[in-house]
Image (tube, rainbow, N blue to C red):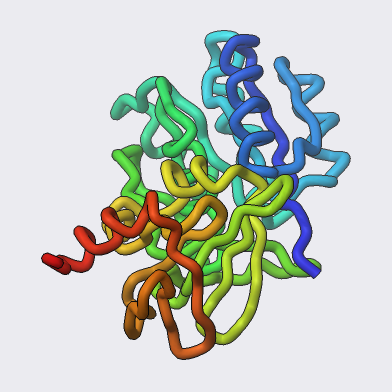
Length: 247
């Protein structure tokens, strides 16, 4: 069964702390805990009840966040993300020694936070350490937690997305279904990679279809190899435009 990925937040600026919590809640991540100073951070890390940590490098003007990262990657062997306004040459070696899985640069938006978490899970699963901070590209896959494992799902294998009560279901070409605990519109805006956004087209109020799996359109039905979908009148014009259908 798919479960929520739990995130520990270590950030000393209350404004950023609240923004991070808000965005994590939007995407259905479980907040394992939070800390705004070194002592509380050490206690939270020792509790060891998180999957990934968001870690501010400069806690109260010091680089103590770097030292906190070392036991997370070393002893606990978990991924973490350094949050920073900038990283200057003087501390690049220090950040590298802590072995972060990703960087998140302030100011950030919901998309960059989501991408940083997914990038961190990718690097961690591949045994890689993040390079110096740079603008992260939307990953061509996403990770979900199944039991105690992180499973990678390629976006090219996603057939359609469906809006549910409190989440979006993502269905692959082999019938597997995964959940993103955000609205369909937020999933379209923030979760789907930029390079693939035009390939996913909304066909009715609740469903978005990956056009690579569309085999034919008959009247108001979009037909794939596995099933057919109703195309609402309000969306059919946009679908035809995406497919370069003139009439």
